[in-house]
Image 1 (cartoon, rainbow, N blue to C red):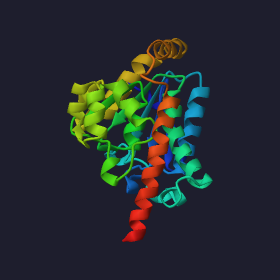
Image 2 (image 1 turned 90 degrees about the vertical axis):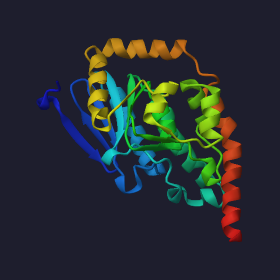
Image 3 (image 1 turned 135 degrees about the horizontal axis):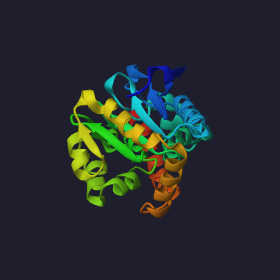
Length: 260
């Protein structure tokens, strides 16, 4: 059980940090947009990750979303000129800031857990897949979502799906736009465990605390695991492979809006 006296909380706008005994919990807190990421909130998320990594007393990190939903992806309204001129410095930089949120999550010095309730869509799937372990609600909705918006996936989306499951799963979700439940995600290997919605966060904390009793050891162990289980291609290469067609798709979407 968590010692209530060991619990502290700080708020940074749409990113909340809570420290339990040896465990940090970061909450995406933009429920009005189902916890969508903006460039600014992505920056704050990266800053939160930096704080957690610097705290040697933390042995595990959980990322979750407020109000029963994980993350609905990137907030396209916040990308400024990205939809009009995707190759502009502003647009390129805005996308890079959102990409950095989940690449930094994947680089954490501590083992990480994504506690997924409600929906994870697009970049929200990337964020969840960047974790070492996922605990998902059986009724969670896992949706690639890019192609339905007329956009090419980005941020290493395909690589993350393949690494978590298989090329077939990545094709079904990312190309054929198949939505899956949390229960199905666990069956496909995209999650460690699916549980009742009300149990997701408590189960994630239980799992995290099993790793947090010896933070120094778990930090070493998770780095060894990552070094000895390389992805299909380096994440940086996956980012670049998807970047050009994603920028093209953003520009095409802008042209279609202009023709309406």
